[in-house]
Structures are given as C-alpha cells and as structure tokens.
Image (cartoon, rainbow, N blue to C red):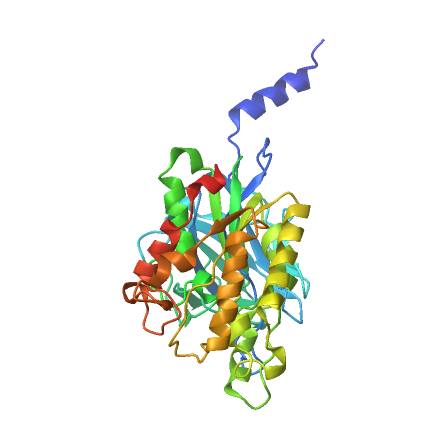
Length: 417
C-alpha cells in the first residue's frame, strides 16, 4: 500500500522544475569541447588580482545540453580562492553575455571554493544548452590577492578584468585586458561522443592567426567535423603550447632574453601527456605535431647541451604512441612543417636533414595509427624546404590563416570514422 507521503513526494517531483545548477541524472560520459594547456610564468611576471573579476572567452568545438568547467591552480604556490564563478553564452563579440543563459558554477555544491596549490578543480555539472562553434564566457571572481601563476600565455583571444564581483553582470566595464587565459583549462559537455586532442606547439596553438577569429587548424578541423553528419559527435581539444618541445622542459640560458618568456613554453610533451591528453574527457584520438622546437631551440632559447638528433625525436614519438595505446587511444603522427629561412634561426642543413628523417619515419614506419602529412600540404612546390608563400605568416615558420585552413583540410577524416 502506497504511503500518503510517497504520493506527495511524487507530485512534487513532477511539479517542481529541475534547477539549472543541479546535477542532472543519467549523465554517462563527458566529451572535451574546449581545452588549453596550463603553464607557469617567468619570475619577472608579477601579475596579481584582488577583488576583481576575470571574464574570459572560450570557443566550443562541440555542443551539448549540460557542461562542466575545469579550473586550475596547478602552477600556483598558494591556495587559489574563488569567490564566485559563472558561465554564460556570449552575446556579440565583446564582453557581454546573454543574461538568460547565466549560470552559477558550483564545486561540490559550494559557490565559493579554495583550490590547493598544485591542483585542478572540476565544477559540478550545470544545465546550459550550448552549440558547436560558439563562444562561452567564464567569469571568475577573485576576492583575495592572487598571483596569476597558472596561465596559458597565448590565447589569441581577448579577455577582460573588472573591479569587484561582476560575474553575473550582463556586461562589464573593464579596467584592463587579459593577454592570457588565467586559471581556466577546460570545458566539457555531456554526451556520447569522443574528443580529438591536438598535441603540439605554436603551430597548433595558433601563433600568427588573426586574433579573436578562431582560425587555428584545430578550430577549423572541428568545423569540418560539424559539416559531416557522421562526425558531429567529435569534440576537438587544442593542447598546443607555443614554444613547446617533445623532449625538454624550458631551460633558458642564464642572462639571455629567453629568461623573460621561456616559462610559457610549458612542460615537455612527454611530461604533460598524461594530464593534457589522457586525462581529457572522452579522449579517443590524438594528433601529434611536435619536433620543430626540439630541432631548433638548442643554442639560442635552450642550451647547446639540449641539441637532439632525429633518433632522439623519433624515440620521443614512440613513447607517446606506447602510452596512448596503453590507454586504448588512437594516435596519429603529423609530419613537421618546413622552416627554411625562418626568422628564429632554427634552420640549418643539419636540422633540415633531421626533419626529413623524422618525417620519413612518421610516413613509413607504420607505428602511428595514421599519418597526417602536414609537410606535403604546406611546402612550397618550388622549394620543398620552405613554406608555401600563400600559407606563410611572414616568419617562414608559422602558417597564416590560409595555411591553417590548409592544415585542417590535410587531415583525413577517414581516421575518425
């Protein structure tokens, strides 16, 4: 016999709407919709925030009805106190949000939270329908003096800082611009799809692309997925870091200008692989484009003792393959783009020979699950050691917007079917 209170409870469940910030039932899995790799900052960077709101924009590769946000204090040396954090769909191209989409983020049910030094923090799920190829705004209020030590240095996306707690404001009056992503490293959506992680350096990060336009090659690959009915379930997570190397952490020679920026280059890909690839929600595939900085940095941005051979680089790639396969993740090798005449001093006949050797191994060894021949797509038909002029940003190393589009087109979609 049904008790009267049970019937009353059932009626209340039917009549009371599900709160937007509650954890929905039936979430089986998560898919990375956006991500970035955190790094630390040089000792000379004394940026800090106090009683201020950071309003930051991210561009989603795949949509969903429920999302969660990942914050990070992984390079902080003191606890990070988050007074409030909110998320909303963006309105227009500035700092404004769509007020009806504004949602408070909670963390274990709490709106204010302290993040221990050296750790990330994942929000509770929040019901907020978002579309693929759309912008999301994350606003974080920092009530206490907070050193800005966990960053992604080159977002190619505007962000803003404002006085006080204005996380829920439809628009804000900025007191300054943010040239980095601070304390924000991921957005995932509930779904049955998979994430494709792009692991790379500045070419993957989007260097020299037009700011605020999301024309990095991973962004443009995500749009290709959305145009293909059979691939719309795939998210793309960009884990490129400008200056990143496969084999070595940043190690600027003492007394050189590199001491003022090399910390932004991030931990070696071999070191960050578990966090930046294997820990991504729903990861099923990874595209690797690394090696040019390993070949080119030694003797300038890095000490001569860190000079590497083609065999060293190949050995690093083999480690990534083994670690991906151990977790059931498919992994694809991208050939290293040409860089003859580059303005960074990377090119030499010796480095070119090593690049060719690495690329030949990627193409022919069969050790990767598939090959993406970026080199073939991007090289100058008149000189295969140079970037095609139409794709060259001007520094002869980084592609421009057209080059990024060509890179995305060079990715065989059959790899993901």
